[in-house]
Amino acid sequence: DTAVSQTPKYLVTQMGNDKSIKCEQNLGHDTMYWYKQDSKKFLKIMFSYNNKELIINETVPNRFSPKSPDKAHLNLHINSLELGDSAVYFCASSQTFGQGNTAFFGQGTRLTVV
Amino acid sequence: QKEVEQNSGPLSVPEGAIASLNCTYSDRGSQSFFWYRQYSGKSPELIMSIYSNGDKEDGRFTAQLNKASQYVSLLIRDSQPSDSATYLCAVRYSNYQLIWGAGTKLIIKP
Image 1 (cartoon, rainbow over the protein chains, first blue to last red):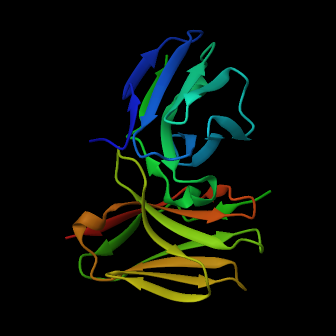
Image 2 (image 1 turned 45 degrees about the horizontal axis):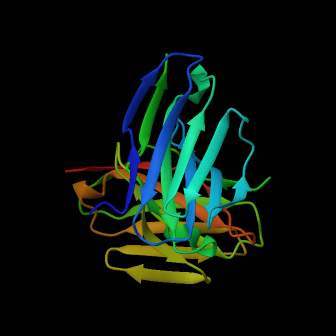
């Protein structure tokens, strides 16, 4: 039974489109995260939610909008996709915000913008 | 600017030898340090954490921390081909945010 699941695993889309990535965790964790990993493997946090409330919002274009309908879900919607958005996006969760190091990661969504 | 730096590699080590991975960080106030392993096409997984100066051993893995030098390392003894992966160093700052290095690609040659 997958702990952190995100869909889709692969996403290929054209510039200018709007797309969403969904994430769900069944661990009962309070905190969820979105990370972006670029082609050089650099992992950078984008957003963090604790009990449905936004607590970290890094310098991310406002074309990216996270939504947390409940603490088990954190979806990522991206408007007007650009070539530079191509990357692997990881969802993760941890018991609490202070335990971000022990986050469980989803399998990643490889987004390719053409 | 909080930074975590790693040599991107690849670091090539013969099977059975010791692999040594290094990481430096910029913020002296950092308290928690982590090593993650990421296989190609997979998600990161936590393998070691260290909080105080010195060595911490877990099986074939040893994490070393030197806060004065702002340096943390990971040693893998008796390297196996299955250890071939990218190793990510992560540092937790006072606001609990994790800052990640870009990772070192390790190749264990049979």
